[in-house]
Image 1 (cartoon, rainbow, N blue to C red):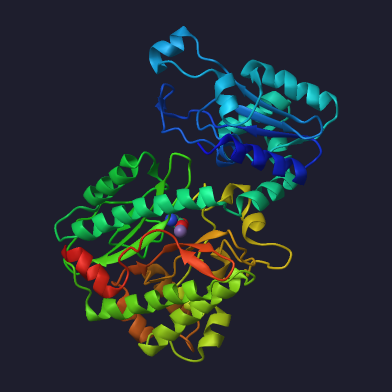
Image 2: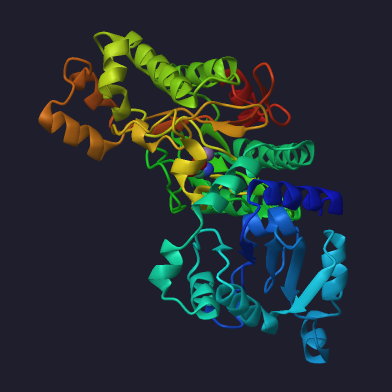
Length: 462
Ligand code: GLY
Ligand code: MN
């Protein structure tokens, strides 16, 4: 946990941004896996953790700016709990550790909320993304689940987004620590990516590294020779020489901060000439992005510049043709690069996505472009110092997408289909680092992870 002052300051800033009404943060509950007592690994709600710092189930927090009250609701354990869970600090002690003086039993929560409603005071809460929390809010507020969803507070969303978007030195250190755990995970993949190895074996080993760090994987490990499937969570294949293995894996710290790193490596340790050509295009887009990131620049512009790098590179090797700027304006590059260049990163791997991408990644000034590919860009707005984001361009040969576009001869003036059809068995390449926007540009977080062709081939040989 960070020092109590950190949480006090966060709540103080929230009160300044939202001086009226009562702000409610329900903490997460245990969620059953296959029967009630056998639960998934507990994951606290990120915003609850941001303001209240306590990563355990069955807590709720109230901030009442008008009456200068901050209350932690929870239960002290009884003897029976202690037999199963061991001794626990008192609720008062937990609250004190995050700078809160007032605690109440969870059983008083409904009464507190009902009295607040009777007093006709506005209750601000964030959009619930778990059915348990939706039902909890439905029960305590006495409104239908549909009304709970509709009643989430846009003012609170905007206030939380404005605070969580700018990372302080404590948060940056946490993320950076997790990039270094991810580094260990990826270097291990490089060592293990040998013909005959099962994807599942390697995925299990690197997930173990995340767990051994005291945290966990920040999201389900993507590790597949079918890297053209963007979020491929299957690990069913056995690797063979010549395969390209895409691993997108990061770690989450005990304080819930994430890293999100991708590397693509040649099984057997040597890129083929064809693989190297595509790899260098993605690498150039990734490195150019690091040079382009600056505060004040819309990330949408940086995304489109990376798309032009990709189209330019593909034109040079004969897979695209025509004017690069026109091709990207038309969206032809999205056959190969159908996702966004990057997203916010923090306590959630797609940071604050549950609060609404339009609030996190866009604003009045920068609107989402509704074109296939660029529409998936989660962060378009102007960058600010303190933002942490991913840089993750890729080139993929997705057989179903190639067939679909080819059947329509879509963007034939920009795509050299006879050549592209020869790449349907290629797979995909993605390279991803995590960046902190600084006053003058950006800084790549963590210790360097092998990234050039030579570095990766060397790491695969070791
Ligand atoms: N790490 C998966 C993603 O960024 O979508
Ligand atoms: Mn990512």
